[in-house]
Image 1: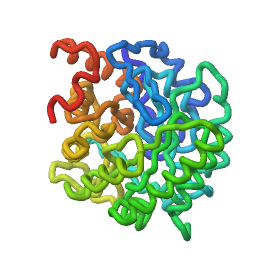
Image 2 (image 1 turned 45 degrees about the horizontal axis):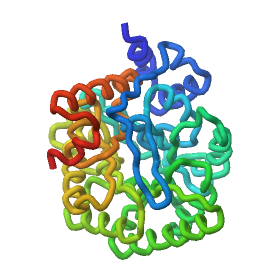
Image 3 (image 1 turned 135 degrees about the horizontal axis):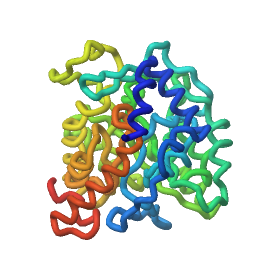
Image 4 (image 1 turned 120 degrees about the vertical axis):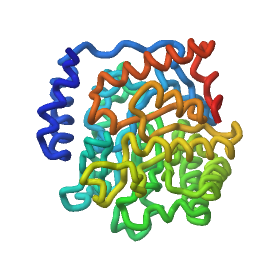
Length: 362
C-alpha cells in the first residue's frame, strides 16, 4: 500500500489551506517522511549542470519543486530528501504580508487542478533568511532557490526585487524573479518589454555589485506567465538574454479557464495550476525555446503529473522541470515515479542523458 497517498485522504477532508499548513507542520516534525524511506534514487541520466557566468548550478536530478509550496523556506531539506533535485522556496517579499482574504486556495479535484489567489502571503525576508542560514556550511544542504517578489503596497516594486536579492545573496543556490503571479494587482505589467528592461537592468546592476563585493555569483532566473502572446514571450526571452540572466521558467499559473474544467470551483478568481495548465504552459515553453535558439536555459513548469508530462516538457525545450500541484493529488511518491519513468523513456529513445532530449520535440 502507498502510505504516502493514504496520508492524503484525511488531508483532503480539511479546507485546502488548512491541509497545506498541516502538511508543512508534519514535514517540519518529520512525520510525513517517516511513512516511508527517503528517496535515494538519483540516476546519472538525470544529473544536470546549469552553466552561468562564474560557475554552474549542479542538481542531482532535473526534477524540482516549484515555488508556492514552501513560502517561508520551512522545509527545503525535507523536500530534497523526498527526492527533488532542487527546491524553490517563496515567493518571499521584503516585508511580511498577510495576503488576500480567505478562502483563497481551492482544490478542483475532478480536474486534478488548483486555483489560488494567495497574494504572496509570507513572513518576510528576515524570517526567510534566518531559515536559509540553517544550511550554511552543511554538507546536506539542498539545492535551494529563492523566489523573490514585491509587496502589494510597495511604492517602488522594482526596488523590492533588488532588496530581496541583496538580503539573500550567499544564502541560496539561485534566485527567481517572480513577475507573473496574477494575485498581486499590476504585477504582471512588469512583463511588458519597457518595464522588463528596467527591472532586469536593476537586477543585473545589483548582481554585478554583489559579485564585486562578495566574489560570489549565483544564477538568476525569470518566471513568466503562460498567458503571454508569442510576441511577449519573445520579448521576455530577449530581455532575459540581454540582461545576462541565466534561465527562464515557463510558466506560472494561468488566469484562463479551459472549457474542459468540470469542478464547480472553476469560476473562483485566481491562478489555475495543475493538469489543465499543461497544454498552455507547454505551448509557451515551445515558443520560448524556438526564440531562444540555444542561447538560454529553460525550465518547464505547469501541469506536470507524470513522467510522460515531464518528458514532454523536456522535449519541448526544458533542461529542468518543476512541479507542485500534482503533489496535492498524488503525494511525494510521485517524485520517484517521474524520475524512473524519465529514465525508461530516455533509454527507449536510445538516449543516455536527459540533455540529449532537450528540444527534441520542439
